[in-house]
Length: 260
Image (cartoon, rainbow, N blue to C red; front, side):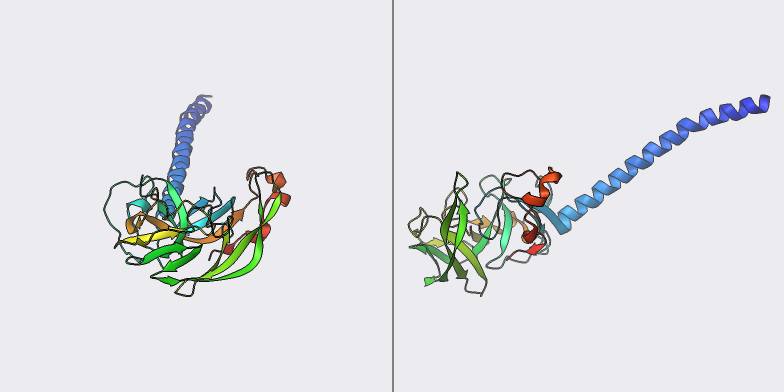
């Protein structure tokens, strides 16, 4: 009986130790997982979703995409909350004309914006009657089939669509909701300062970009990364967590498609 009592007491003493060890092991696994996720997010890829239509038809509201963090090197904005760990960029590689890139809004250095790079340091950028001009030369623009957009009441309407080809050969589609008479379809000449870039949306009449002083020229340091691939896409207004609605709300044809 004495031996039985000793065994019971030993078991009772061991149980809290085992429970404590199990909790510590769980915490250890969670911490390791968070650290791995932080490293991936900081050094490799970061997910973003598209909340506005400024890059229609290339990117749609409800698109979820991965941005490569290593493409342009790293700045303080590569790290969550942009701590002032260092200035400038390390392992830097400048954005190329035509890249779609995420950057921190220069006026607050915290809001994430995503636009297309159209102007490089030293370029002279101007819009004349809806046509982009780079260094006094009109960028090639050819009319293609209308883009079918939705108005505020959900009705379909045709919108003028063009294929624009930048000087380095990058070709992409743009739309003009207001034809060539929109607010930013005629501008002064913008001379891009050294170390800065000129960004524009593909939805030319519905994009707050470098043509507006609230955005302006974007410093190289403010670039977060280049948009690479759409990994998920859901109709505007639908909820991604409503899995049972996915058969008719997910844009299946856009999943895992590259971004150009």
